[in-house]
Length: 269
Image 1 (cartoon, rainbow, N blue to C red):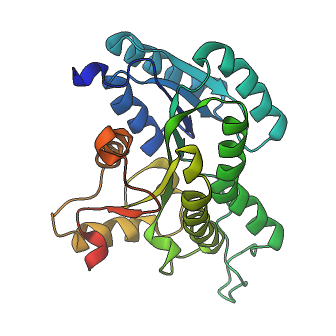
Image 2 (image 1 turned 180 degrees about the horizontal axis):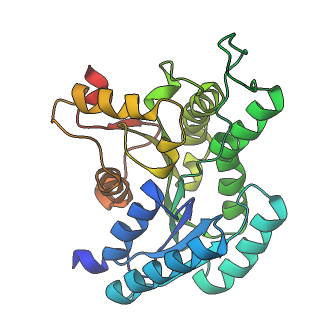
């Protein structure tokens, strides 16, 4: 089969597809014939450029790329999307649900007496971050499944980071969320398996994305990542998009419940 047409007629739903890993995945999958529904939150000026870029990708790859500037964490918005999307995609054609939402609170657990003005992380901050970056995946999966939109061989992919296992400044809420996502994926891998779903998590290496730049001390993370990486460079969004593509192929049928390092061996050091 022509690899440019291998996903013809199938769809990916990408939560958080305006930049970074989500956008790179949209490019990669469209190049192989997959139609894409991109969900994001952007202001009008940023959205205009994004929609133009996605339209160019769609034209170049002869695919459909739908854009939805909605709050992926809001139940009513999710239901409205599913209702609209179902009329376009048809039943049983969603091959991939990619969870790439980067929304959370980056605060310390306690105020440091260093003369700077800090706000501390609250329980509500943790709840919001955990839902945004972890458990919202469960709601999206169940509702797409209930609507009959997922294929009989769908792939569910979430994104975690090394910060789930190591200390990063200001990263407590996101670390909690990413750890939760890893645990959630294991249970989803088992309990959604009878429906043909395979759920996996990708741990990317430190990557220069807009969301990384928001983390306190991100410059330090980038320098350390480059130094630690055995292959001598940083991870790029395209590296991760390539593995997302591979996980959607028929040859990846038996991968379920895995945490896959996509970092050039960075985690080994």
